[in-house]
Amino acid sequence: QVQLVESGGGEVQTGGSLKLSCEISLPVFNINVPAWYRQPPGKQRELVAQFTSGGETRYADSVKGRFTIDRDYTNKQLYLKMNDLQPEDTAVYYCRAMVAGKTYWGQGTQVTVSS
Image (cartoon, rainbow, N blue to C red):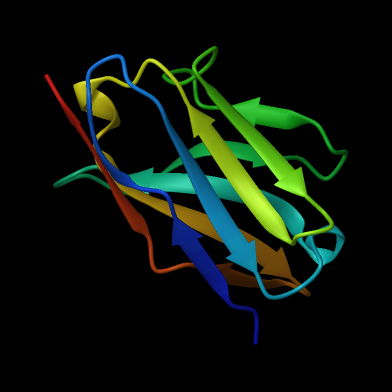
């Protein structure tokens, strides 16, 4: 069983920054395509950023240039640095891991951006 625990959410004003963390119970190099998703109020969950199987990063068009995904092998952490936050970034943010063909999700962390 893989466990993921997100932290770092909160409420910020437009233009502010937050850094989300996801602690993973397995070494990060065992995780396939680690990713961050988000679910805005009343909408479906959507991909925000991920590492590809080749180790490259991919971002949703809406966050390119503002968000950065990163990982720390030593501390088994996945990060999402978010700058210039906008009200439309308000959502519950989830960490996702794929291990041996199974998908695991964290419990989510709320990010609220006020105008």
